[in-house]
Amino acid sequence: MSGTVQERVYLHKQIETMDLRELKDMQLKKLKAVVDRALRTEWYAGVLGKAGIRSGDDIRSLDDLRKIPFTAKNDLRDAFPSGLLSVDRDEIVRIHASSGTTGIPTVIYHTQGDLDNWTALTARSLTATGCTKKDVLQNMMSYGLFTGGLGVHYAAESIGMMVVPAGSGNTQRQFKLMKDFQTTTVHATPSYMLHLHSKMEDFGIRREDLKLARALVGAEPHSEDIRKKIEHLYGIDVYNSYGLSEMNGPGVAFECTEKQDMHLWEDAYIMEIINPETLEPVKEGETGELVLTTLDRVGTPILRYRTRDLTSVNPRPCPCGRTHRRIRRIIGRSDDMLIINGVNVFPSQIEEVIMGMNETGTNYQIVIEKNGALDRMIVKTEVSRELFSDNQRDLERLKQCIQDNLAVSISIKPKVELHQPGVLPVSEGKAVRVIDNR
Ligand code: ADP
Ligand code: ZN
Image (cartoon, rainbow, N blue to C red; front, top):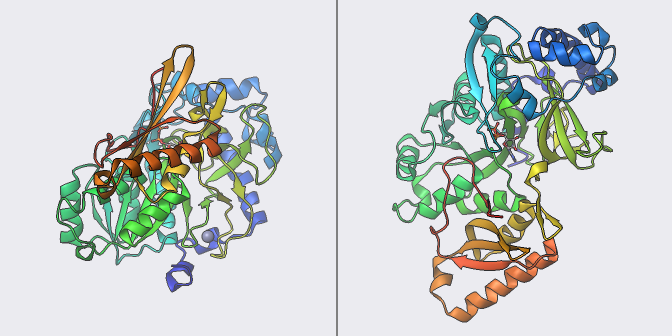
């Protein structure tokens, strides 16, 4: 919906449109302060001490950031439970934890100030997608330790939206709430949006029954084709939302109404993109691992956090006027990469092929097994009901076609299985796409 008036509405205009030089000055000032706070934690006192950093004043320029060692997810686990706490426990008002997609979860302690800052960043993000107090937001992310629930909840309330705290799952009730309260905006994982749509007919819901205008989707990697698919199925605008619990949760980077890459809020985070093998910065615009430093965090300051998420910077100015640089869609995690008989494959490459075809449905799964000494990959995908009841030959042809397209994209010809809608498992949280049985 570019070109609308709402597009030019900013929640924090002065900061969102700040000159990059000014933004950098602000970053340096905040970086010194957060290093001082980090030195008050047991963990960073050790790590920074070894690197010869004894006070924030040892950081004289933004380039000095590179003197600070990286922090990895395992470091957060090693520092568990309180090695990263920089204030008295009395100052802490809430904890959050990551979903544990890749192992033991990590814990972040928030002061009231931390929560207020997070709310402000997320509220700024919602505003950038055109949300206003007139909107009704149905939050279909799970409430609890996971940050997608409470994070967006408080942000939406803070800008006066009416929030329907539905939580995840219970598809039939989601529809009922959407109808009864005239939900205009939903917050969900992209895979859940697709699942929800596949159930509309079963529950007798027509598109006209719903007032839905936009969906904010995040928490898992998804392709541009998935966005288009969701937009087309519901006739709405879909915005990509990126965040991680270590950096608060939602509200780290968000698309504006231009729908072209996500503004990463550089007044709150310093971003770097590094080559995950050499750990050196990549050239601007090249793909690498995103590394983030919290600038405002008080409870659990985190410096140079290796997110393992692969992305690149789009350095071009955005027509919306926001100066904060944009990151491109996350293509996966550096540890998502599958090695199949020596060939490197990212699940996102397979998704792109499947979602790019009209015949294939909304859900898919990748299974990897040992076949003697070799690896075997099976790609399972759902196809529409009509297609399934058609003759066998069409299905065979489609299978062939998927195989050929995959062979072009990933240089592997996996076995392809077609299933009826609703057969493959759906997850209420983050989708589990890869089953590695090797
Ligand atoms: P976990 O690391 O256990 O999944 P989180 O709940 O903190 O814990 O999830 C954060 C991670 O989710 C990010 O590091 C990233 O891998 C993924 N993620 C979040 N939002 C997006 C998005 N919009 N696109 C792709 N991946 C995302
Ligand atoms: Zn923009």
